[in-house]
Length: 508
Image (cartoon, rainbow, N blue to C red; front, side, top):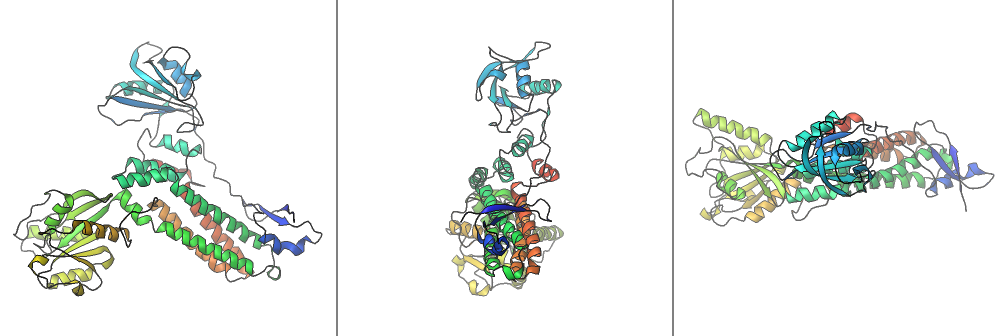
């Protein structure tokens, strides 16, 4: 049967509902069947209007210091006119060249005729440039002066200094990338390991954004269905409709939770993990630090109290950046200096993502060790039963609630097994191995946690089947939709965008 779309105004702002009404003189009798018809209404939420830039920006895009070349980027409506004015080259002018053209010439002051540098000019045309605007890049000689002189000349001619991340911000405002991809640019620049770079590249290629937008589209359709239910009396609405919508909301909750479960990995890859090595004196803490670091970073001595301050070393284990912290031995210290070292140990433990607690397995647990373990959270502590080459009095059975590994750091310790276990504990995953191609950031996590709560509230309301609960369910669904939209940049305020892009370097 063919359906016609019938528009009905709604009291809700920014929403338009379209109902599929069978061509029948008794349309009111077919409202319930209209809900079941696929793809028959549209839910409209406008994107927040943000001011699009109208000026031309310039910045040095390469790092300061000596190098073969330096790059000056120029983007905006006056990019080509400035290139024509300053760049000397055989005809035609840069503005008449095709996109992707490399031009060799001289960058010269048009007033004084002074040549500032011999350079290459690259042409990028809107909308296919990085920013989505007409852009040029000037490749000049490296060092501190050539690029600076070119940039100063462009400023005098009317361009302005780009703000941090403004080129990427314009790419977002012009629809070239979404906000997850923009953040991936920063992640790639700050990547501290190959795995970090792979994750950022996957996100830049839209792995996360695609999944978030699909989730948004699903919830958008559900929100439209809930909105449509508001116009139907209880006696005309089959109970199967609320049940079906409740099941779809449950599936959305599961998808949001699956994304939230990737946060630990994203946190470690972006921020690094802080791993504190703790235990009594002379249990092998410094030896372990040296083994994981791959060099003699800490002094190893049979005399207790050798380490009196925290010793930190940055390492990458299986592609995950970590900060290892060796600490002073935990005991009743005989001097004030060692007491301060122990205070710093406890401070480091309070900031740790994981504690590696070393125990001398050839001895029974001391009262101090039992007290220390009792105060620790088992989920962020891994106990290493060291010195098993001397016999083993303390075993896993003595460590209720704690995971442990028995080893001898002196005689061929199972470092690969230890590293695998460290990563499992930090990521909260049952197996190390290869992990996913996406991982959310702290900003994403905050928005998705709110969205998850709102979706569950909507689901609980819908499942009652009561018409009085449909309006609150619609409100919760809309709130969840708004939070998911924030993740990829829909309806973001200018203040939020400024906060995100301010973390970028100038010129990116």
